[in-house]
Image (cartoon, rainbow, N blue to C red; front, side, top):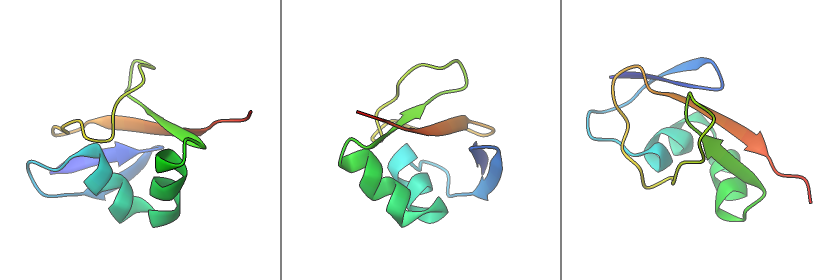
Length: 67
């Protein structure tokens, strides 16, 4: 299925989680999310868990967190 991370199209398997897609997109970004240095947002700006499901054409935005 096709999803988008920060506007980049990613092909990922059906049933993938946000974590699966971010891992495929960039392992360093996944580490930043797990270390609370970045966050994942859905297309409406809502914070989403990386264990959450993805659907065809899901749009995820990764933002760095500055503390």
